[in-house]
Length: 225
Image 1 (spheres, rainbow, N blue to C red):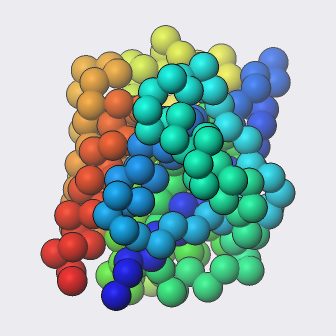
Image 2 (cartoon, rainbow, N blue to C red):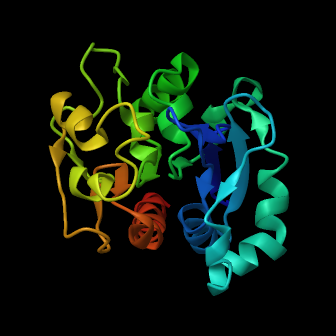
Image 3 (cartoon, helix red, strand yellow):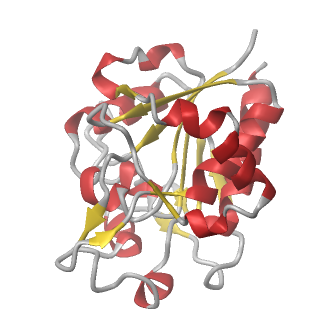
């Protein structure tokens, strides 16, 4: 039976006091999408508000997977993302949250998103996120009251990377926040590929890590077959 992946994207298009333009970072959705598509999976999109999501880093469109996403069915489907509250997430084998600065705006506290992530994890499905996408794991509490990331090996955009990227625009440091909730944080050299799987949770550090997150999610899903 074909595996089903739900990609949950932010609806934000600006961040910070200077209203920096943002959205989902193109390679962080396009590269995993390519891996899922090549594996023959059904891929659907949801967003928090149901409004049309935004893309960032369109200047990277010359990358083959990015270009295929933009000109093929990926971006067309993402623009039709359903409102998360109208999606039966229990039907999916995995959820994946791409980054970009946008998730730092609407994903740190969203109650429905936190519920969806917790329920997905607790039923044994795969949870993946990359770069700023792991902010979706922040403040997720399991049924026993513990934080999802507590004791888990996690990667995300690092303090060192943020210091040279968007420090004035973000309201908190993601590496610090995840670590404060008990994550065992794995930081590689800035901008190097770094993805890590801990059970059914797969996270990645930055755009260069997005392909690896997709690959690791597929490895877990195929092992479940």
